[in-house]
Image 1 (cartoon, rainbow, N blue to C red):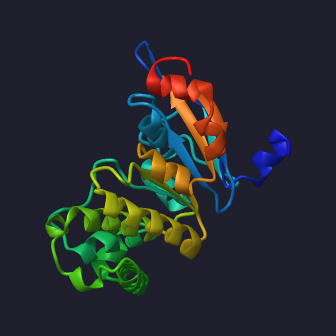
Image 2 (image 1 turned 90 degrees about the vertical axis):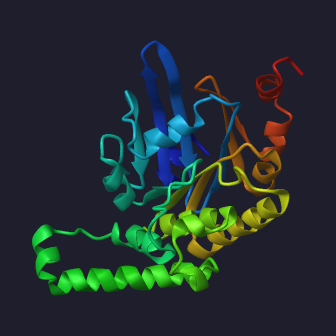
Length: 262
């Protein structure tokens, strides 16, 4: 398949995005073509630029060159909430819940992001505003049931165990009805059993919601077990792209991680 055909078939099409901070080239000419229902990984040593890529994709930073398309919509230059509404949602390496809100309210906020809330409608509680609230509540209940958190919906998010906080953050991201879900080190801080459960959860999400997933992860066992294709970054540049088997045997990847040629 040609590159042109790959781009045409892509759900998320990223072409040559770059950004520098002062004299530091944080990400250089990053490309990615994620197909519908693809499950891809993004790996690399610490400081390779992985989270910067996620920040570029989600509008935290604006690329200084290149382009980002989700289906037929161009995302680079849009604000973060506009990108979320377009269908690109994410979780974070350091969990970012609303700790003093309930489990239910955390997911409800994600679900409500799909709707345009105008001040007058909110004040007057018009029919459209009430309908959007009811729809968000229904989505939140469904997500909590799917993720096994329904019995804890009234608890404050900060009181959940670490593993459940991770599940809640993913549930909130999915409540936005994304076309692509970005997972930033979802296994960070988890014990081995929790990582096994996380692998099952990601596979379940992939099949249940029929979306594209791109994940950053340092746990190589997890990445190699679930990802169909992997991109490797080092010092902000792509050094390898391939299947898990190809990446494991790539001498550039081995050198990047071990600091010496294979």
